[in-house]
Image 1 (cartoon, rainbow, N blue to C red):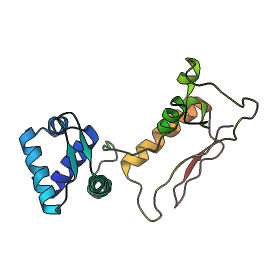
Image 2 (image 1 turned 135 degrees about the horizontal axis):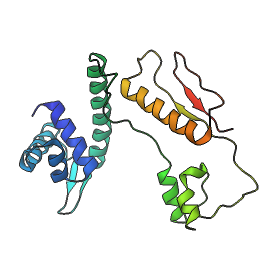
Image 3 (image 1 turned 180 degrees about the vertical axis):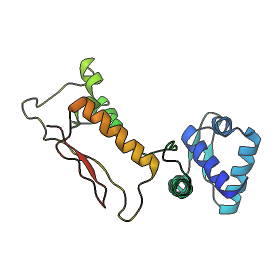
Length: 191
């Protein structure tokens, strides 16, 4: 198993929370996964994962390493994709920051949240959350997709931006502003 395969294995273990699930995803024996991570930890001279019979969790060093691995693997995938004709069939992961954590906090009575209604429609409908300050609606919230200046937009990000823009338009109508250019910032505001 080369270094990139080991990094991929490590990220899958963290994401799945299990050596067995990661091994199944990558179609390798569990023993191979265990051995590869032990070698990785030995090479780095640090423990990356806390293992119990029920859970696998990252150590603080493991969490920092995981975040760097995700970045490195995404960069590698983008580099490979830039040399292939994959625009017709992009694949891979796109990370999206979402508001799920805010909803969880509100459901646990940790305070008030302000989110677009579509994030909490189900919770409002079934009474788990209650709308307050109904007479003071929040202003429109922009949705932006950005990528660094001077970099080519990867096919998977382009497909994601087009997909989310289509969902937005289907739900809220055409956006007030859709800007494109060298900085590639696409903004959508409800009317």
